[in-house]
Amino acid sequence: MPARVLVFCKKPTSHLTPTMLEAELRAADLMTLAEGLELPEGEEAAVATMWTHFRIDADDASIHGVEIRWDGVQRPIQVSAAPPLEGELEETLENLPESDAPGAARVREHVGATVEIVDFEMGIGGSNHLAATIAEVLAFYVAEQADGIVWFYNDEFAAPDDRGATLLSTDG
Image: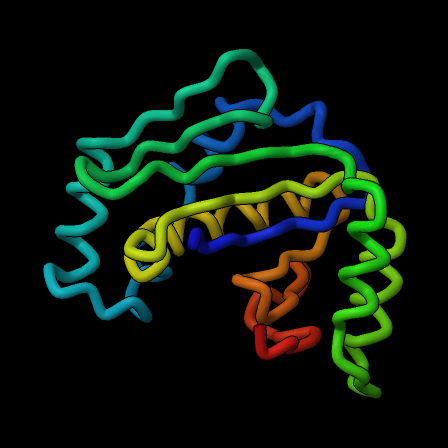
């Protein structure tokens, strides 16, 4: 089963390109962000190795269908961007836990107003390595660019305006 980071966007992502994703990733402080992963080789070596394998495969100028290759062995991060499937938003809303937390209302409103979902799909092994950091950086970038919120691994919702805060935990 793959690991997923989803971005529920209130605006389309048609203006985003693979080149923009790469620029955002290259500007990010990946070593600091990767510290929490406690990588056996250390974050500096892991990030240096990642850049030797890094490439984005894309069929066109869209982010839909992009594959982000970051490791010589791990599966690439696959990116899809599409309008929600029929009933998908309703099902997501039904499965959210009841909560009076301040972020819960924001999550419900945002999911209900979603026009496009961007999915960063990776292997479980990658989700415990730099694929997690790459997906986090790019998901927040997409969220900033398309008025989105991020759902990490069917568990925690977060917003780009306060990346460290959990809006709602679903215990996914």
